[in-house]
Image (cartoon, rainbow, N blue to C red):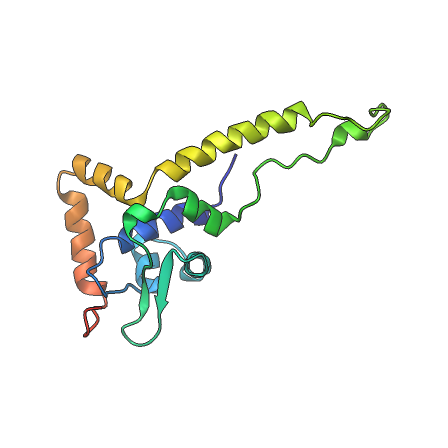
Length: 167
């Protein structure tokens, strides 16, 4: 199974947004710059995550994006579904009913290949549902020698848009 580049960009962006001070935002351009990706492509995924209720889009000069939920309430599955959509990766088209030697009667049982693929997808989704942004950040900081935090903090010091109200 291959997920699009947007999933990686979205997950990295959400982890970066989880580092913001309360009420602050980051622009799509800043997120794209930090990760070395296209702003327009990333913006599409930020908007999808905003529409899914994962991010909040804040308009205006201090605007940008911030988390709409706490990091422990955002799973990798939430992000994947926001970016890629809810459809299963495998879609059975019942090709066993086509070709020069198809089933002669309508099958009464589901396709065993489809059933196996759906079980695998359920396991995959269960694992993505289990992993949250908070757990990723905990693991990251446990392994960090300080260089990742320093790089992130230096970037945020320049690019974080702090709200005057400190929402």
